[in-house]
Length: 342
Image (cartoon, rainbow, N blue to C red):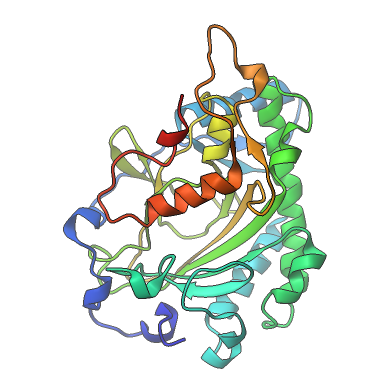
């Protein structure tokens, strides 16, 4: 438990050497904020009908691989309740967090620090993470933290509301691609949350919250209230400013493949700051790696003029390959998608 950054970093005057990133992995001193990230209003009205919203989403997915949504159906109060809850959680005593703590990433509910396996890392990330599955709730809530005492009830309600929003957005994307209604139900069996907590860092130019990566799942929804998210576009890193009560929607590899390359996943990372803790509340939708789920480009999107770009495969095999890739020493070559291209 002493490994958790949140348990020892308060008042630290310098970055410990095992948290100092090599120069090529450090954030730059200055990264400009991208003002062009689309902000999409999901509330249908006479001035912005459903077809307009769909086209905005598709354009954002093609050009940026992510966008922000407002008027999405998750209430401001619920989002604020989550911010308060996770502030309390990460500031609880060590003893109160012991029940879910582990020293390496694992299945089920786990609280861990840095990356996938702390003991084998050459350098550590400046973050703690609580991660757990969410669907179906009755199956997973018994493994969730017991404290704060309202955790299971409040997070359960939040998970259900995010699920409604998520499938609304997936239906809009599917409709825009010309897929049958409910197409993504079969590849969105798993819903999980990862709450990443980045305490203030004495020198953000030396440490990283989380390195550049692209999500292996279908689609990701991120709630944030402090700056720290950056995306890689056109050969450079650009910042994404938080919008109050908005979600950042991020395209994962599976959606890029199902769309036959029409939609693009995007590399992103998290940086730290020296004054304020940042907590991002992330919800992932994707196939269940415990089931024999086949993923492939949607047949409706494969034509003589737009040939199939990716192989058909079982998602559990993809995850094995993806994890092997991310565990390779940096710098890496290629992407996890390379073995699946035709």
